[in-house]
Length: 125
Image 1: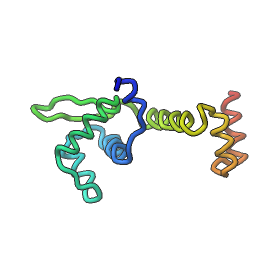
Image 2 (image 1 turned 90 degrees about the vertical axis):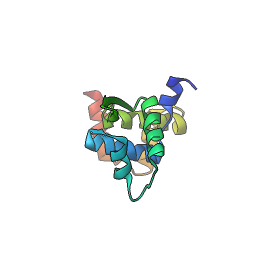
Image 3 (image 1 turned 180 degrees about the vertical axis):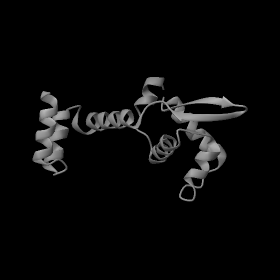
């Protein structure tokens, strides 16, 4: 699998929780991540390190060395990952059509007519 393909995969729920934790804390060690996931996700140290390595391979994280300890940080802000996730959803469920996506959100009453008008105004500006 190429680097490009890995970065296109959607995050698992646990990967997303780890990334959310890192966004909140800015920089973290694997041990801090492991402790931050407790008690809901009791993971072994090796499992946390594997998850962090995979997030790094996907381009979500990078690390620096502090002595012998890896210190991880997110490579992009939350909005960047949110946009990529929405793009993946549009590709997967609406064959790449943002118009069908928005129409579906209106039909399902996720977006109101007023919200749609504000979005249309933003597109025009």
